[in-house]
Length: 304
Image (cartoon, rainbow, N blue to C red; front, side):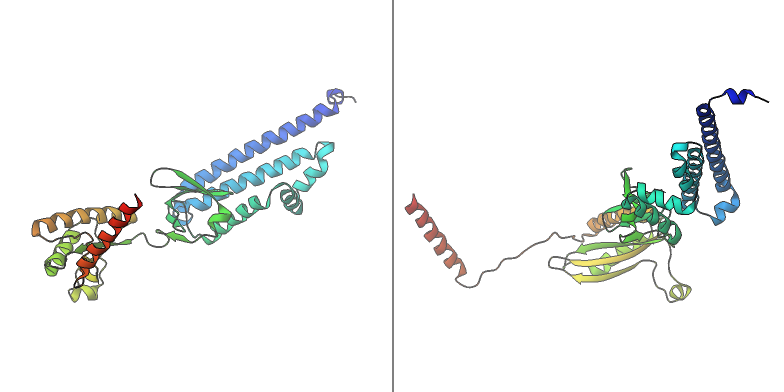
């Protein structure tokens, strides 16, 4: 029995099958995205899985679905059937990817997996890379890590580069931060009064947190400890340790403390000196300097 299907050219049948496979691929990818999104919003996922893993898994699922769909569609095109079968086999995927992608791209993908597996940082962490870039991790893709700095710029760094750098993670296991507040006072200043003012101004800040143990509290250790750390050329350096809940609060705590300490020092007459250099001459040194200056002037006149 002859059906209408037999009157359709083979080329159109192949294109129809390829189109159906691609549509199914797009639909499956959409369903997977919706499923991952709903899973990320569930209470169990929020408690046990972080956003970094979910975002990376979503991109990985997209690659797998589209790779499988494209491979299946290529098997229905005679000229590309071999490529399609290669895409549908595990070893073939690695072969094709290795042939089509550069070593740098593969390195970025592998480094992305290493970042997700070992978790040196996660989305939302504040990190500093080898002292060059500081910001909050906004996203981790298969190829690069995106960092938003404090000027709202996006710094895009390939995963292979970021995995080989020294990373300072402020939020790795503990968000608390210790800020150092250093002030130089003059040698003629009242040190006890200066240290008392620093302790009072820092201790009264609302962002300061108490890090003392119960034993330290019983022993009367102050919340803020101020020490004399150095005797400089022009000033005496006083240093205080102040803890805050996170880096943002710590920055505000540090800035406000400098302002308040400066105002109190001005009221108390405590000097914050700038660098000064005192030059002294040995006996008869001034006469020798004047003699050298006279010789230099005479030489200049002779040349003219």
